[in-house]
Length: 307
Image 1 (cartoon, rainbow, N blue to C red):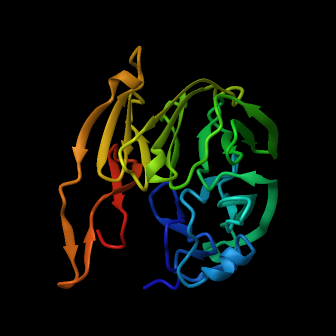
Image 2 (image 1 turned 90 degrees about the vertical axis):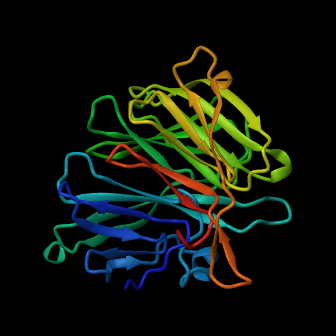
């Protein structure tokens, strides 16, 4: 039993042996004993978090945790504050924060020593927080995109500080909703796959990435019109194959092909299975978010609360 409920937003951290250290639903941070960590409540302050205290935050890739470079006890949690749509502006985020955890506190249960520290104040896309190691193998790059814009923030997390390298404009602007942003395991590709509305199709954006400078280049952008409500993305362990979940379909692209878009292949189709709760309640097991795991396999969850 856990006191923290989860919707879409989540991250967890383990030690090098796989022992759980902490986890969060985007609103509070819990320790390995499933209790709220010291100073761990109150992430992402604002109306959206207030309305989702019971269920958990609803923001795909809305939180990310990584070890602080050069430390064996400090961990960063990066997270975004979601804002409701207005008559003039659709769903978006307006803050990109970091929170710092020290696992040496409280006999190894940890404690939050800095919380909701603002890194970016801007009109940002919904979630899509993703990180990759710097070419030095120690530091981290985090890419955050502005909403409906070709502009990306480049954040470098080093052992000494967190540096905002400013904005880079590349490719065409696009509005995203539910989907994912991922780096290839070798750090050479950055992919954003997202649905907005069924009538507008799913946006696929593939970029080259430079792990030395944090710069994106050579954008490949297309729209798949397949009636998808939600999207996901993951890349094979050898960094060659991109897999996209698109509600009823799984697609594969060869990232090493001369024409990446022409390499598209449909490798799975939803088989129509529904988990029957009762004669009137059924949960379809369509494809949702994807994750490459340490065992080299890609796992895909469903669009509902049952496996």
